[in-house]
Length: 335
View 1 (cartoon, helix red, strand yellow):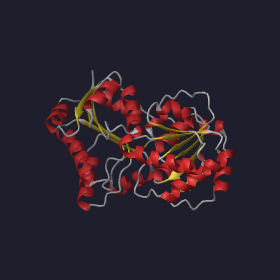
View 2 (cartoon, rainbow, N blue to C red):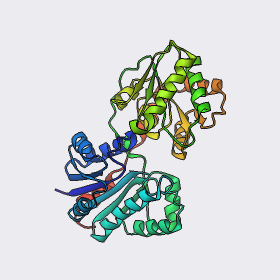
View 3 (tube, one colour):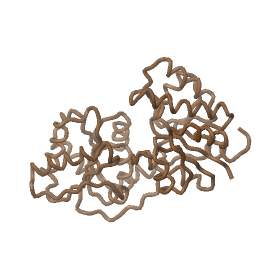
View 4 (cartoon, rainbow, N blue to C red):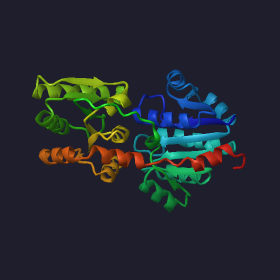
């Protein structure tokens, strides 16, 4: 049985990263998998795999020495905007895999920005030594091309997630995340959009990483109720995929919340906090609200209402993640 260890932002109960991990484990279910996780007990119980604490470097090192394949990703691990410390850690894991002559795979990552020049030099040289480098966006591909790193462009692996589309209910969803550009004006305008056009519907407010986003969702709920005390609201923290699939409408920030909703043809408006969300909205022809919320709400609502459920689902389900290069590398003896 092939031994695989997976390094990423796992165990923090972030919906997007956990969805990627679920896809990885499901595809490689016949392998012996160990995940580096901030919460090994949660990861082990949730997915039925081995798990080692992320910063237990002794056990991490032992796992890498005894593995056949190291997978780094997905997500945006190799960047220093969040923190230089995390970039150093993920680079160290990749370096250890290379040092011990393992097959090292960069899995559907977004690379950069890397502002520290020395860190950028290290990442560039590490990636040149990996067995397979795959990225999820054109900007990352262009950066690696400039660096002379051979990389392949793939779609987000969550496109291959098996989503059961439930019967829609009289519900509009709002998915928010705490972010440096979050502001009251944006929250108020989204609340006004809902109160003006969807006051007859239940409003489900999705917290996709409870430790970071729950308080913001409660704040938004209070804004809604201050505008309309009769509006029915609920903050949702679990059964995320099932609840997203039942929505009529969604206004969302996080890339993977939008992606899952589109797979079930949910009419969606994106909030543009990141270039990856902007690109997804452009590709799927979704209305887009900027973080400064300068857009005309009537125009946004008209665009949202005019979306086609069938066309959205066809778009999302036409994206197929290509596993062939990964399977060839992992399940054949030669490197």
